[in-house]
Image (cartoon, rainbow, N blue to C red; front, side, top):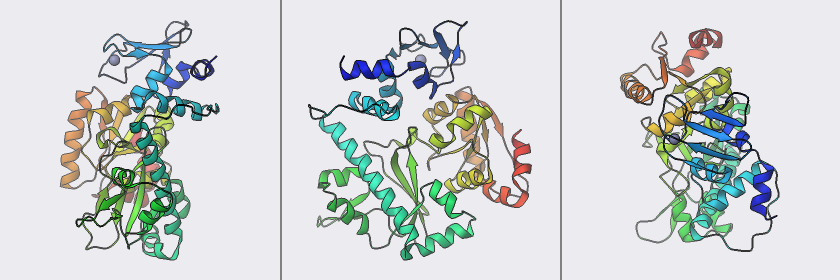
Length: 356
Ligand SMILES: [Zn+2]
């Protein structure tokens, strides 16, 4: 049996799809049904067949085996999907004989660079140079444990540390530039780090890989306040929901997600014990993001900042959520506080009651 067949017979498509889509067994048989993750619908036309190990949507004609599903939902090449499934299920991959295509190799390099960057930023946060970032976190009530859980880090100010690390690991110029982690000097004489003197928030894919960063300025004169990774071969902003990989199990359990505006709101609520919480990644909410949430629970509780910008963002988001036929609830907190401030001031129980 070749490896692909071995892999397909070792994983259960119902379990794999079930991590992304809420499935219900149809009448005790081998067929499971749910809302299609690939198009907008109110009644399920998406089904997964346990015996035959395939999925099929009668609404949009999506269909295939477990590898096709992972390719479509994670937007990966065939070999990347195989690798992800094998890794996730602890199935050792055979040594590859054929070299991967150039595009997959570049994406793999970029993912590796993000892992390295994440590690470097975490080390720097713990080092003397990370003092200002640690003070900021302490001021915002983020404990070292929570900072570690979210993989927070610090990008030092010289603009050379990450570049040097990546070069010493042997990444070439094309890979460096495509990663979005460094910028080319205008005079063409090499590169420098995109993120400098910033508190770093890693952004993960739904499968938990670091695919981008957001960096918060630590000094008032640095603009913008939040700097995000550009779009890269591994990062499409409009398709990523911040913290979804951590929150998705809780979202299913609770039957709702709590949508907030900022990274710090996510972290603050999570630290207080509110787990089904996510944010859009520094953009207005998109259809794709709404569908990602709806795959896990039909209800979305919107809890944006009480200022005008937050109000406008909430209004746009609500329209979009309704368009995508999600159930929407808006949480308004008294006292003009954002969610993070509110749980700190009023306590998590009061906040929890508002959710229920
Ligand atoms: Zn469909």
